[in-house]
Length: 377
Ligand SMILES: [Zn+2]
Image (cartoon, rainbow, N blue to C red; front, side, top):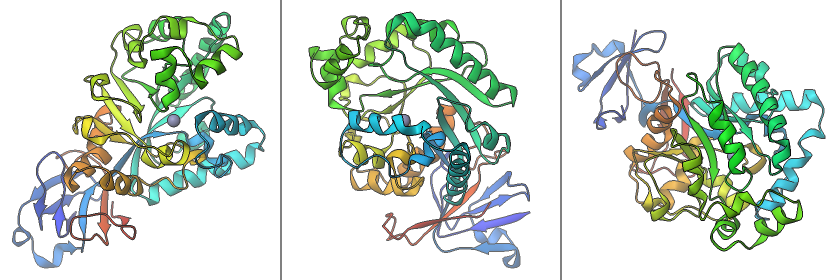
């Protein structure tokens, strides 16, 4: 049994408590929250400077791309980034595995306990089998040529089933509105079963995506035309969000939304990966448009980031929004756990095993460059 206390306790399902005490079992299960330190014998109290919050949920990552750190040049835009990603197979299997293992260790050290992870391969299967973290594996599909959609789905099913065979959550998901024709969206929905809880999709990450759907022009339009892509992609949709109808309004986590406008938003969950957006597009979403109970945060992959740290992402969000600490921590933990269906994570509610992060070196209630996370449980 442990009694942890700091300057502030952020349970997230209730308001922050000054000098609140978190009682957990030796296995990290939340037993109680105490309003007052005086309720606990002083010799049993572990007192810290800083704030305590539940473990972070990284709502969007591509763990299998960890070996591509530094391969893509910064600020060159999305099409250039895709070119860099295409080098993913030019590496030794051992190097890929080593990078995956190191990246997971980094997430653990940074207080991450759950991950929504995009998979195009089974490269991360071995690491995930160790169950160091809770994962929802999203088997990503894209196929702009309609005659190849059957093969794309067949391949995705095989990958999905391998993750499910080791007892992990796994669902087939669409990559993005510009890379998924209506016919593929339909196939994804057709394969949705009782184990599928959530879809996720990259959304409005670039200006070019909006141009493609709204004006049928621009760099994405030229690129898709150039590779002889199915014209259904842009002819049947006036906006990126029109793909939701094809996905029959399943529960969806939309990731990036860098170029989303308020009128584009729906009741779905939204994910932001600010450092990756700055890395690739040098742009950020307008944070004032989101419902802060539905906003989550992710790191994206090391191909477009120099670290897998939710606290570093929060620093960028904090600098570009009016969110207070409680909102920042909710988007870092509770909302992602809800979106991904991680029932034991996301808050200090009794019975959960959410992990305990101590955040230190804050300036008042603000995150600064030197702030850091210590994992207490
Ligand atoms: Zn991504």
